[in-house]
Length: 277
Image (cartoon, rainbow, N blue to C red):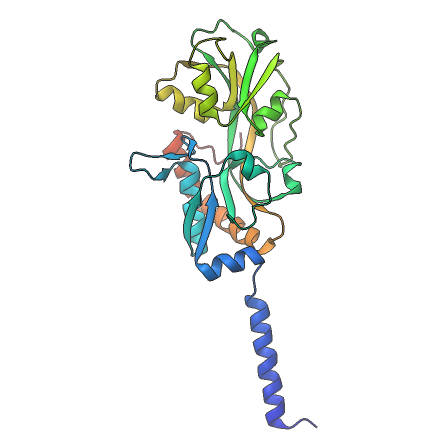
């Protein structure tokens, strides 16, 4: 027979161990909750998704989405702005905890990343200079066409794009460039295109909202044809923390349910991209 005091002590110890086990989160989530801050990687030069505003602060759709996720998780937010190819390379080594920068959940990226929340869908389009005589995609055959390095747009030009998310409309490869120019970001590509038709580039493949924003800012570009594909854009974390993925997923789903994602999309794009095509 176990003495009552001993039994009480054993039960108390068991209860404590169960409490600790229940409270223990995944490694990244545990770090975030203990520090009270989540570090988020995004782009500093990709309006209207993310950019430095007149107050020298990060602003934009992705930035607002990241802030809302952090708020719903009950933590503060800190932004960092590494280059896109560094983000997509993986091996973050704790430098940031989450990426909110319009990443498409491709099969290849899934080898490194978990995608806990698709938060909007955007058309991928082709931009040409206003002076371009191109009337169809066929008129760009053999030309120099640019896209951001390691992006879905570059993969599309290389005819090597696989998007595995559910409900994504099928697409065809409609461009046959002679040279694919891989550049750091869409603004670099558009800066080259604005020099004139064929001076450095004949076209750029990228996000339609980014092209619309560039037009508003005076870039002499126009959209050629219809979107070449539609892509889901997701929050990304490195593989290995299902608890963090669950927290983020819950936050994104709550934003969809209460309409805040729709409102943010309309605020920044004038269109509700939070729902699939």
